[in-house]
Length: 102
Image 1 (cartoon, rainbow, N blue to C red):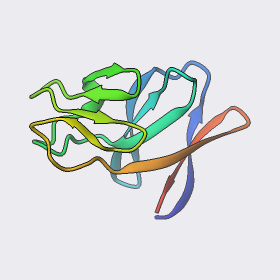
Image 2: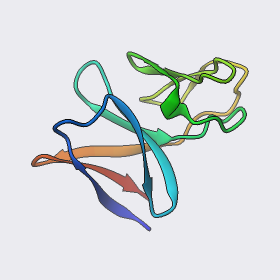
Image 3: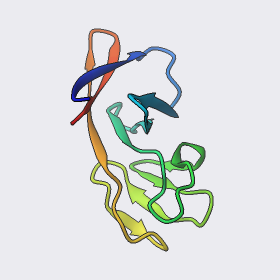
């Protein structure tokens, strides 16, 4: 699949959650500035679901082993994870949140 996919209305959407797009599980988070970030839901350390972690501004902390990632860039901020997260482009069209999967 490629292109933009609607994730539904922005209004009422939780600050952090997971969605499945064409079989791919993606975490979606609202940033402090109101922007949205979308990234692979699995931690690159041991595949724990990041949507169950702690969102701290622009970083997500995995609940399993406390790996932390920048959710704008995917960069690892704290280990034990060593591999960056895949980040997906997001946009708001009207009142719909969309993510682009390439």
